[in-house]
Length: 564
Image 1 (cartoon, one colour):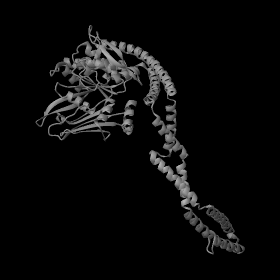
Image 2 (cartoon, rainbow, N blue to C red; image 1 turned 60 degrees about the vertical axis):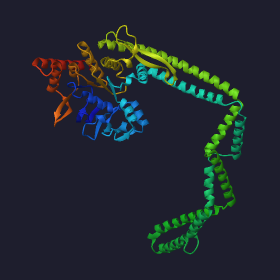
Image 3 (cartoon, rainbow, N blue to C red; image 1 turned 90 degrees about the vertical axis):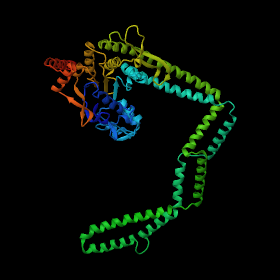
Image 4 (tube, helix red, strand yellow; image 1 turned 180 degrees about the vertical axis):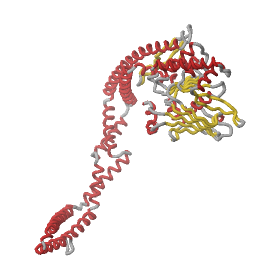
């Protein structure tokens, strides 16, 4: 959820902070007060173009910052992981920020970590959709439309997409192998001789897996014979040899305690302990002696090992490969030589396999196409009905499936089509010119797909443009409906939309210390009534206007209550 928007030194805005609430948020204010600047700030946060002309006069830089609260969608988490920003999705909040210096340089950050503009744009588009007079309308992208149609189609399409993807990858793997073999020329005697030479050379080396490590370990042991023998001998001598050896001294101590025990029986436990220590130390001395005697100095074996390691090193350098890779090269060369010597058989087998896998893919893609076509008809009927409710009574919506090259997601792309008026041909939704029509179309689509689209915040820019009467009431009701599952933000001049809002924000422009500034104020209670009264009657808000405003607010409350 979009929780807060902070703006500093952007055009007429010196410094302001907007707190967004769940549900329907409405921005209102006089024409020219600065509502469009607030949307410009959000657009900057989503990666749109930002130039030095947007920096407030006299300021060094402007800054826009957005605070977003979890839960975050699976699609967003996946993108954050791809960008190495996994931790951002696990924080209590995610902060997107962008600064534009008066010199023109732009800096982007996610949770204080600098990121490229493209990353900010990708992440932003998974957090907010702006519908209306903006380029951030992801619902118009073919890839997004395909995703929404498949989501609308439910688990059956999701499962079939997986089948299609697996069939496609298997088919493409076989096709690549076949293409590779066909590219190999028939006159390849030189290549076969080369492969045969490498095979013979590598087989002659008789490389064993893990051999290098084992040889190095053995060589290290042989190279340390003198050191190990010396240490073991001196340790053994300290325990066993000479008058001052530990065992000799301990033996004397045991004998003395034996005599002492005859006089004082209380030392018997101590004498017993020392006797035990003597036997244990004697065993350790025997083990040391055996260890030293087992050390064998074998210079011939060491020379043999070093020669073998050198040979493996030379071979590895020649092939630019370690021991494991040398074994892999040997196996690959054998397979390639076999393939070249039996080319026709390989081509025949792979051709048959590739054709079989292509047929499997085509069959799976055909099933997916049928499922999408049925889902498209259902989706189009529901959106058309929503458009009629939104006073586009003659509009017809359709979902076209256009053929495209086979891919992991099937053999077609999706295009949302619309005919706003009778007699007009169907055109892609993206080519609809009217901002009011576009916003209502997006609203109708969103009503149907609100639970499927993972973008949590929608912004509708002047969705009331060109509307009046019943159409405005219908749009307001639909916005309330959408806002039950998705946070909605609406910029409007329509009092009915403002009256139905859960959170009202007033944008005002006034003079301060000789300069024009734009501020934002949260409205509630009487302030909300007065603002809606202004929207109804201008500056002359009468008792009658106030009652009308109160009635609109009560109507909005009733609609929200009825939807619970």
